[in-house]
Amino acid sequence: MSQVKISIPGFGEYGAETNIVVLGPNGSGKTQLAQQIARNNQVSAISAQRRTWVDENLPVQEEHQLLSHVRNSQNNWQQNSWQPTEEINYVLSTMIQDHTNLLTKNNEDAISLGKPIEPLTNTKLMKLQGVWNRLFPTRKLEIGGFFPKVKRLDGSTDEAPYSLRYMSDGERTVLYMSARVMTAEHPIILVDEPELHMHSRLAVEFWDEAEKLRPDCAFIYVTHDLNFTLSRRGATVLVARPNAATEAVSVDDLPATVAAEVLGAATLPFYAKRIFFFEGEQGKGLASQFFEIWFNDNQTFTMPCGDRDSVCAAVSGLKRVGVAAAEIIGLIDRDFYSDAVNQSVTNGVTVLPLHEIESLFCDQHVVHAVAEHLGKKPHDVWTEFLSRVRKEFRGKTFSHLVARRVRSRIGDLLDGAYNNADVVDDLELTAKNHSTNLNKVDLPGKTLSMFDEEARRVIKALSEGASDMLAILPGKHLLSILANVFGFKTSDFTDLVLRSLEEQADKENQALLTLGTKVEAALNTYLPPRRS
Picture 1 (cartoon, helix red, strand yellow):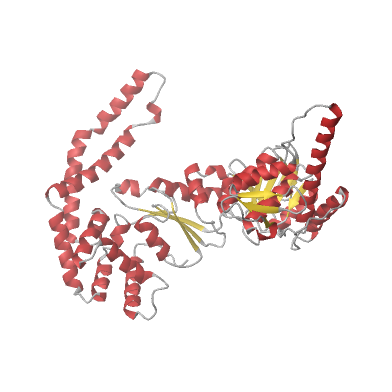
Picture 2 (cartoon, rainbow, N blue to C red):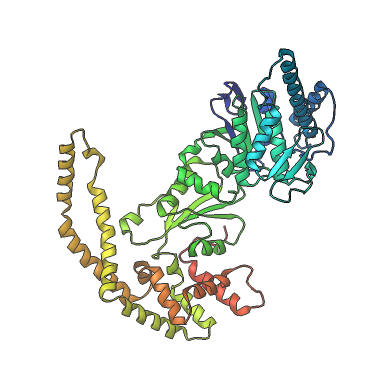
């Protein structure tokens, strides 16, 4: 990377040891900041307002004339960023002329020396085609002359090549960006909205390639896309503020696993007022279905984040990094964790008062609402549900549940018994320290008392049969029993409840709309409001 000093308004002078990402929401003044950076430094700027259409025939002019067009377009951007740049044809023509001149000279040298010379393999045009081949292996780029074409390699061999004007937006953008990067004349390449007209994966792959093409240059990316920002691992991230200040933040504070989750999701929008993380996987499981429907406004961005630790890391990481103006919140299941563990979660993360997401569908008010919708007596359905649950959680099933709850508490005790301060250079002393700590815990005695406590707790929950039961007993098991009471498969029962919550539910189906209203009122007790 080029070792240059970059003057950045509102921030100061920066030694370009890493690439830079200027991140900020729309209206934060990013483009104005980019223009100021371009005026204050030796920069080859690529505008967000870029024309990527290539004419059927490229202009044939002397090199200085072609370069003059390109430079004039860049200079105009510094004053009028809203005007589309028009340099694509001249950039490609410059590269073709350079390619042709180098091949001609190489041939002349071979003739002059009277012996074969190694063929050229690294002209700018060849490097551009190399990038193209790696990103679009089924499309051959034919731009060795002034009538550029693209040939499909995955179709009939008789299929005629097509002109560049018929390329997709992504293909044209890659061609344009590659040409601009290869012909950049300055040690700094500044790109406004680098992800524009490319889907997220292509944008990441292309700019990885572009940085390898020009290791002699520092790259400055100006974007509102947090996903793209996170893909530039190791880059210096500057957040553009509306007050003209520019603040550096450490995106690497985000755990790599969390960054990967964010990167794999749809664009994290800055217009969102809330960013909500929950346990689960994208497009898999009930939680993903449920929260996609529950948050039915366009100002809440939801993202599954794996397990509870990842949810906590995502919330604390984004809060610490401070790149999003939205409220950052998370929700994790109560599960089998002890009260002490659930009360000590990350700030901004809420523990669901019930055992897990499936437990929501077993709420008494939800059950009553579904029963009424199906023409059944709510009291009878609920009574039958409780009766079956109490019959189910006896004997070995009861013992297993109590043991699972005790096991969680034992894990907490063991975690507390191990202290980093007890780890010393001497291994024997380290072992003795840990043994002493375990003796203090009195695990056998505590285990017996915990079994007694948890057994009484489960018995009480089964007896009362209200929200305590939904907090203590596993929700998946309860949901299976409840669906059976209604005569449904579990998926059919949850589908009915989810359909009632959908905003686009059939407006003519008044019964379904009524069910949705009642279900929403019941679930508001446990969840963040549907609309920010």
